[in-house]
Image (cartoon, rainbow, N blue to C red; front, side, top):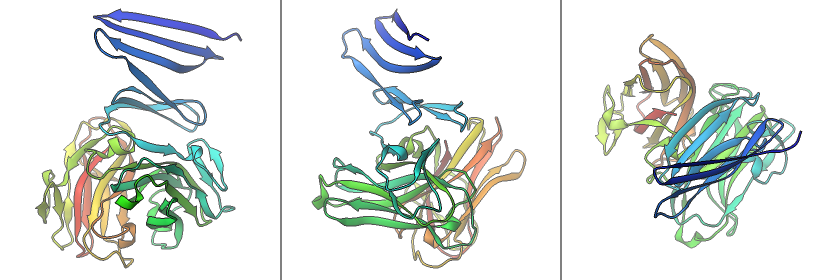
Length: 360
């Protein structure tokens, strides 16, 4: 079939838009776009594609629209938002690998693999400061209560040959089979490491099949919501503004009281869009990170029907250390118009601090 070239031009209220779409075999790829305003400089659109050539991101300036697809290649979700800070995210299949294979949704590790699987990106423009590394991945199996290592993630200064931060991911960390989760690791780039090559590496321990979607770097202080940090648009609520069953305010966050109860519940929102969503909690532990007893239960509760629709627990080993924010997530199905809660309930006397909860 010959290639079809279509040129579109529109002029409204002094705005000029020209876009070229190249189509072949009914598959269209948006190649270039330019947006101009009378008397203003031109803003160049940016487009991102996955390994299958599908459009996953489009935007101009800080306004970004992102698209998601199911395993069959059907577009399932789109979201638009303003991202105030440059997003630092790298698709797993685009990074260097030692083993494994590309698969729809990322890079797959199987029991035939072991050791370091994904490394890079050797970024040299990460300024000294505090950051959170994020790994989006899923496991084909779950093993509640099993502390055996399934993954090992670390931030590596390849210039100096030193580890900036590391975390072991136990088998018990996976809350549902074949459901993506976001794993987090706080780290610090010292002033002496300015301009150094930084890697976010994934090592695999030969257990279930694990698929990694992407890695990302975000600032724990500059971005206002989890969605802006990991590539989606989010609804978020600060810990101190939610209902509580005990505890006390710590800035915009809320701290547990040392008793077993709900640190936060609510927000009883009916505005979360229907469909497959990811709930998130940003939590800090203020104490020991040793021991295997569960510290808290996170759950998504549909207060319209009175049903708990997703649940997971977190243990001391879920944190890389005290005093650092960590992200925890749960995928769930949101029913249109239902009142939803993102709750966290302490199970021991350990002290936890909740900064924000929400969904994207």
